[in-house]
Amino acid sequence: MVAVPVALIVLISVVDILSPTNVHLGPLLVVAPALTASFGGPVMTGAIGVLAVVAQVAIAFLHGGIETMNHQVQILTLLVVSAFVVAFRYLRERHERQLNEVRSVSEVAQRVILRPLPQRIGPLRIASMYIAAAAEARIGGDLYAAARTVGGTRLIIGDVRGKGLDSVSDAAVLLCAFREASHRHAKLPDLATHLEASVCRNLAELSETNVDVSECFVTAAIVDIPDAEPVVHVVDCGHPPPLLLRGDRVLTLGSERPGAPLGLGELTVDDHLAGTFPFEPGDVLLLYTDGIVEGRDRTGTFYALAERLRGWAGEDPRVIVARLEKDLLDHVGGHLEDDAAAIAIERLPGAPAR
Image: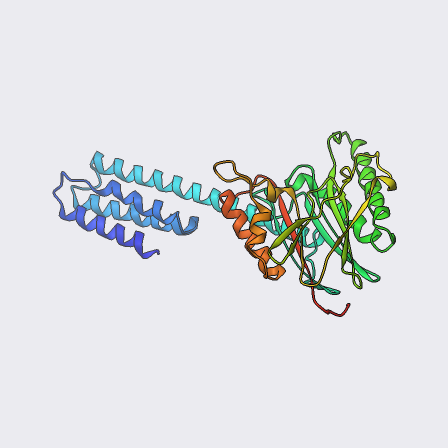
């Protein structure tokens, strides 16, 4: 690509030299460093700028001498414009380097906080996706995790109020509490109560540092999938209900009495009721956050998750998640207003427990 600005410099110089003395094409030489800045670094841009100035000096010598005011102004103008182009290219490169560093740190944070889910847990096959709304980050306020327990698997998906890096702390607290408490509480309502207490403690500590936590909470769906029984237990804490894909039908696993979001500080074990639903071999369970169903296109139409999911019947979780991510981004025009996460879980026919 460097050959393009070099060729332009040669072409403009030759045409200018062969033209009458009253025709001045030298100012067009500024195109060369400006074009180089679009693909090259500041050093390369500066080198092309110097080459353009040298060409302008050569033109001046062949067209009346460098002593003429007209040529001196052209040389000075080209020199100043080239310097500005190099300076802006340097600032852009520094910004890109800083942005890459931020993204690198956020990727490490995501791997630590939001650990990748295994593709296989017990008799289940799992796939997940995560899209952060913040352009400078790859992690936000949505969360998910899985824990293998004695005789079953527990999963959580949640959404911290807000988006981007400001909500990462609350997500980390809830995920750590889930991973630890999943093995200690036999009943799902007890686990939900423990998570409620953890979120409340974290918010209380934040309030002591003058952070406004009056509207902080976390919605979550907590599920327990036994190995030996074709059912799924769900505790809904103010979260969008899971969807079950069975053949070409999509069922909503909504609780008759959904609980309030975690962190309100007014809930007890009795407030967390677990709903039990059939989850048979071949079924696919989809857990998701509201960033998906609240995604809008240019006309303001919400993303029809259940309808799209029905069209992917017969696919495995990995394909469903990949299609969901692409279809969602196409629907919203490539940018989400809120973080979005999803987990697809398939119960395998006759799969041995692991």
